Length: 73
Image (cartoon, rainbow, N blue to C red; front, side, top):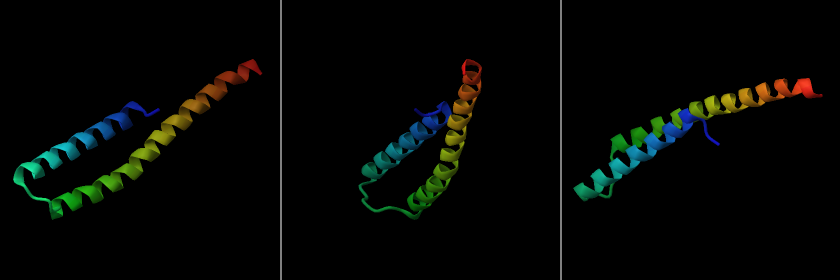
């Protein structure tokens, strides 16, 4: 399961990639531009930080659940 923030991050990334692809198809070029390569590098850097935030959210939820279950031991 993904948190809402991560889900939106991936949806936006897919949307941008599809639009970029469609623009290239309309132009008729099959070559990556420097702008495309720059966008890919930025996206890779952002993904690393986004995954960390999702993992922290998942861990926080698990911790809260574990704390609540202490009462039932």
